[in-house]
Image 1: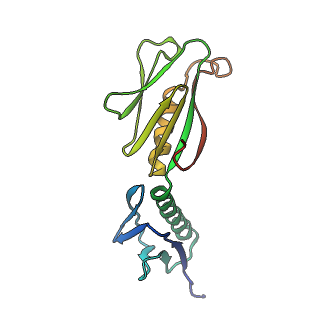
Image 2: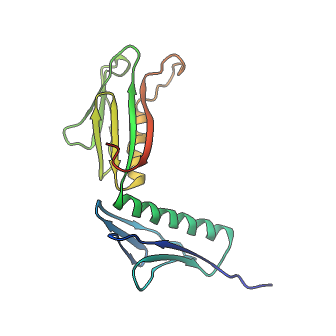
Length: 187
C-alpha cells in the first residue's frame, strides 16, 4: 500500500486585509468590515504563513471527503476576503399585477414588511440577517453586506415571504424576485 501524500490549498491575502487564525476561528478584517467564522474538521489544519500574506489549508490525507471539505473551507475564506474588500449585493424586484404592494423596512430595521400583497390585510414580514443593509428604491430592493451567506439568506427570506401557495403560479405572478447578484455595493 502506497503512502497518502495529503493536500494543500493556498489562499493569497490581498493588501489591506488582515487574516488571523486562532485555533478553530478564522477572522478576516478589511476596509468594509470584519467577519469571524469557525471552520473546523479533525483532518484539516488551517494556518497562516509567517509573512502573513497567505493562508494555507492542509491535510495529511487526500481522501475525497477531506479534499471536498478543504475546498469548501478555501472557498469560505476567499468569500470572506472578497466580502471585506468589495462586499456582496443582491437586487430584487417587486412585481404585481393587480394589488399594488408596499415594501418597507420596519422601524427597528431588522425586517422587511410587505403589505397589501394580493390584497391581504395583514402584512408579511421577512427577517433581515445581522450586518445586512436593505435599501428600497421604488420597485427595486438592494440587499448588501460583507457576509455572503447573510446577504443571500436575507434576499431568500424576502423572496420566500411572497411565495404564493394554492394558486397557479403562471396566473398569479405577483411577488418579489431576484434579478441580479454580484460583488460590490449594487448602487
